[in-house]
Image (cartoon, one colour):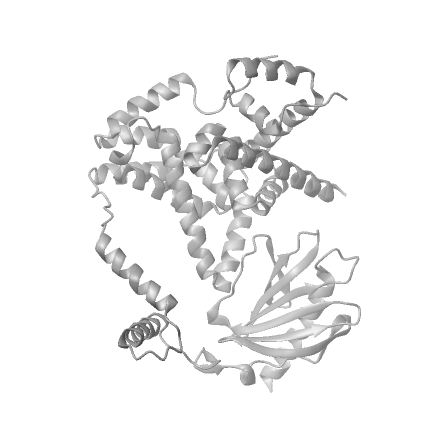
Length: 272
Length: 200
């Protein structure tokens, strides 16, 4: 096979019509005979087709009409103006530098540092509302480690509780390990807190009457995590490690066994 | 071999766009609404793929046009409307992503509803392609970094040239081409890997 001396970026420039005459002529000739460039070109075209065919232009007539009506209703909307206050910016920058650079245990008898830190404390207080010890309220009940549901010491797949922690204000974590190398984390928090989720590939499954969100592992059919709510508590089961062979994540059936087990234990504890 | 297919707008469209840009700078609502007719659907489609969320895409599209209209006087004389509009939309989308990233706290109820919403959208009977294809394309797009996803969609879906993307993203044309090339390679690799896995 001939060596290709046209980089993928240059091929793109050519296809975009961004090359000058001489180079354009060279690449045009080269593409005719170079299998590498022909494959690249085919990939570009296939990508375009996949995106376009799988994303038809939406039927947007109603939305468009509403937008046009809005524009006609308000033909002269005020221009958003950004106020520039250079002096204020300088003052803020100086204050910020003082906050960042002032030594916390400065023995210098200067008031400014205290004033600045006092202001910062006030701002923090007003922004954050409060600084409380671990624990918070759910449905009028203080949620902390002592009041979280204590999950079973043992779970299916030979998982054993190895430690428990309360790392945040509203979060209790139980860490399980098995001899075969499976590690999971069961996190509990108040249901009104919601959950931190950056997962796009999710599916809803049911365990009994409980809706469980299956956070899919990129490997087909595997589980990266499970999320469900029960009796005001939000549970997150996160797969930290899976034995080799599963290629990351746990199989769905096995994870559902664990979830079912936790739910049953939780129900039993709640009814006591 | 045929001349290379060019992206972006053809000559008539460019002429029409310049005429509209000039006219709408004077805040003529009717003229601006011609832009709405021309670019609403493509922009919404672009945002749909960028965000993966049909409702968010619709909201961002409306917001982008309203913002463009309120700031139309800021459009430079030699600047085309379309890339300017996409830049506004892209900035809005990035702001939204950042806002969500900061919060990253969604109620379970909301999440379940949104999963149902997406499933419903995926299963709409008037879709031109089968659900698995659409789903797979979005899955692959979601796996790309935001930078690569933006560049890929601007080039391969919205039809901007690498030089237009460079101006739009405020980067060099070489950097834009590098991003698009890497994005296409990554998209292709992931797509075929996932598609192969599905067929097994």
